[in-house]
Amino acid sequence: MFDSPLSASAYEVLGVAPDAPDDDLRKAYRLRLRQTHPDTGGDAAQFVQVQRAWELVGTESARAAYDRGHGFGASAPAYGPADEGGGWRPPRAAHDTRPRARSFGQPGGWRRERYLTLMREWVGRGAELPDPYDPALVRTAPRELKRLLADALAEEATARAVGELGMGYTVWHDVAVDAHESGRKLDHIVLGPSGLYAILSEDFGAPVRLRRGELIGDGVDGAPIADTVAGARAIARAARVRFSGVIVVLPDDDVAQAIDEIGKVRGTPVAVVARSALQTVLRRGLTGARDIGGNELFDIRTRLQQVVRFV
Image (cartoon, rainbow, N blue to C red; front, side):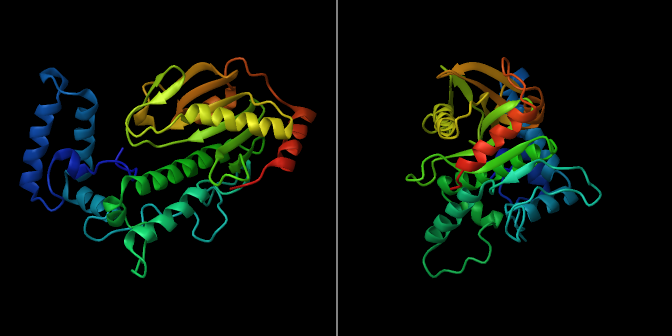
């Protein structure tokens, strides 16, 4: 909430201008509390959003920090790449020496590249663009640009979570499904003791729900689950491996339950999970998936390495 390029700002949630005086901000907060309170017929999710917005801008120090990070006044590159030096690496604390999962490819790389190209076109040929990730600029961009950036950030967040699982896991990011169709890809393939999984990382900017084995809701385009299952089947045929399932990872605020195993789609087990629950699912596996170990793990990794190409 509020950290996605697709999110409404704290000021939009409270219904005031970003430069509103503190007294007007406080009055707006109290009004929105009354309007959204469930006891008076309001929406519980909106009520929580109003409270969260006040936490972010309700005091002078909190408001100053929020403004700096979200492009109100002096802006900061809140949406920049995880590693400005090129070649993505899972960030870690200086004292953290734990082994990381083997990682290949650059999570979110294709979408960031597409975002930068379209952002420059939108700003205008020849116009200066000192910081394409400036939150003030992102906030005014068309939704399709915000969506590209939001999905890139979602992929990077998934990559960080998988990286923390340890050296028993191998992950490939931005895997091309069809070399002749630019952008058709699997966001991540994860191989570990609990199975082989294709992972879709998404941020639709709003809560989603399921209907007949597919995601629906504001901002959902096409058939993301079916497309991911089809991509996994294509890679499986090429590598002569079998996927244990497909996992769709969404922001915690956008799902009704942390782990929702929805059954099989075209014969492939599928789960929709909150981002905070991803490590739990990858450690234990989906229902019915068998453990992989020893020589079989090595063999599957070798087969994938031979066929995986990146977008």
